[in-house]
Length: 200
Image 1 (tube, rainbow, N blue to C red):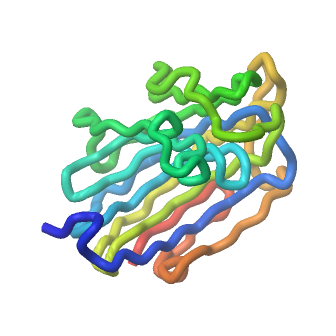
Image 2: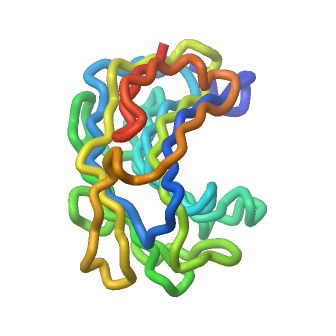
C-alpha cells in the first residue's frame, strides 16, 4: 500500500467554470459504476471561486470521503479551512446530491443529500458574495487509477443571496472548459456541461 507521502504523485483535472458569478452551486454527482484506486485518490467536486472553496467526494484506497476545502493551502495548511470524513454509505454507482452555499459572512456550508455536512466553515482571506462556480473531476496518483463514466446532472446555480433563485446550468450559460496537470489528458470527456468523463 502506498501512502500519500511515499510516492511521486501526479495530478490531473478537468473543469467547467461559469463566466458569470453566483452565490452557490448544487448538483447530483453520478458516481462511476467501476472505480479503481491503487494510490492517491480520484475526486468529483463543486467549487466557488477560482480555487478558494472546493467540496465534494473523493475515493482513496480506503474508501469514499466527503471533503470541503475553504483555503487550506492558502492559509499555510490551517486545519480550520479543511474538513474531510470517510462516508461508508457512499458506494460505486451512487447518485449523491451536493450543494455548496456562500453564506455571505465569510463562511460556506456544504450539504450532502439535503443535510448540512460542514456548516459555516470559515473561508480564508477575502471572499466576495458573488464568485464564479465550477464542477471538476480530478485525480492524483502514479498513473494506475481509473474510473468508468462519472457525470454531474441537475446542476443548479444559486443566483441570489437568499437562495430563492436557482438557474439551471445548461448550454445557455456562458462557461469555460479546461484541462489541468500532467494527467488532464487522461480523461475522456463526454460532455463539458454538465461535466461527464471517464479516466483512462
